[in-house]
Amino acid sequence: MNRSEGLVQRRNIIRENSEGVPKESQGVDKKEERDDDMDDGDSKETRLTLMEEVLLLGLKDKEGYTSFWNDCISSGLRGCILIELGLRGRVELERAGMRRKGLLSRKLILKNDTPTGDVLLDEALKHLKETDPPETVQSWIEYLSGETWNPLKLRYQLKNVRERLAKNLVEKGVLTTEKQNFLLFDMTTHPLTDNVTKCRLVKKIQDAVLTKWVNDPQRMDKRMLALIFLAHASDVLENAFAPLNDDDYELAMKRVRELLDLDFEQESVKPNTTEVLWAVFAAFTK
Image (cartoon, rainbow, N blue to C red):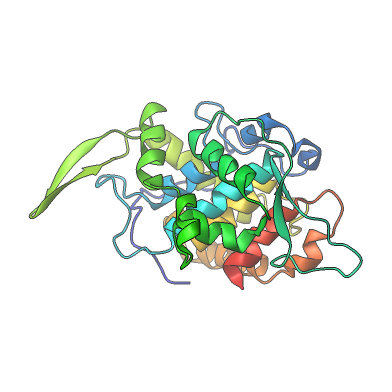
């Protein structure tokens, strides 16, 4: 994995007790269809969606924008949206049937069209509801990103996602809004104002692959598992590991590689799993 530029942080003491981080093995599986599942893994002070967490990892603290060289975060954020909808019980994969289809061949279908209260999620939910016949997870990542050659599907593109997520984080007091001059143009930036929230996010990820490592993806908190995968797919996971010492860094990366090397098809058929998670992971690692 290439090291992304970004996050320069003072070295944290990794083995302190974390605040607001749930224990991975306390029956998270049974809560996947509840809206308040979004609380899992989020701090009690500031609750963030997966999309907001991935963007926050990718933003440079002082500059307030993501790396100009990062061309992965756009599709990564769309993957976050699909997983959020899956965790909140709004979407699911179609039944595998007798002749079992692979994760990438199965369609994403609407399970519950009740609005979530999040504008981006509800916009994606509306597109899913209006689409017949259903499409695959991989197709939806492309459509929501605007990366399709089919002009009829361009209407599904979610626009200005990073800016909209940044504004959410401004409203939550994590970021602020500034204007920065780049010779030929002005750009709206969103520097970090709440360092505690970002430090807690970074430490939560570090703990998940170090002090709280359970060596079993089925016992990991689903949000944390999704965050690690999608942060990696968005090329921002490196920012969470940059403050670690060399030994911890190598161990963290080794465990992330173990997760990336899993058989997603096999994991998706285990009890109490969320198939949408594994379908999204498969789409990014195919």
